[in-house]
Length: 103
Image 1: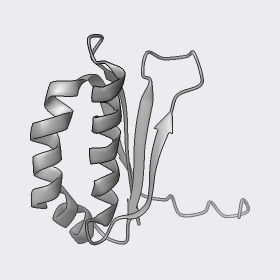
Image 2 (image 1 turned 45 degrees about the vertical axis):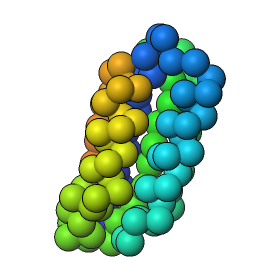
Image 3 (image 1 turned 180 degrees about the vertical axis):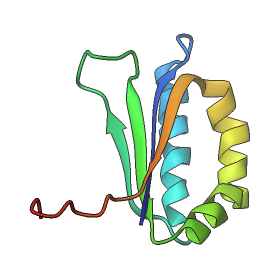
């Protein structure tokens, strides 16, 4: 399993209609085959400068690669992500095997 997460800050000049359009477009990514447990997230803490996050899971590296190259994802990046996002951090996780005695 791969958990793909990205935390981000939108550009300062983005208004509420642009923000809404961004998240509506992001939600459509959940329909790409292989995407599981898609979530849009709003930051509530104050320990970093990011405001939002997206999280999703994939059963395999192949399904994640399919998502990354899918035309809907590529279009989202070009039409929404690049013009709207100021800064981001992307992290892709695989679960650790349980350590003996800690399961």
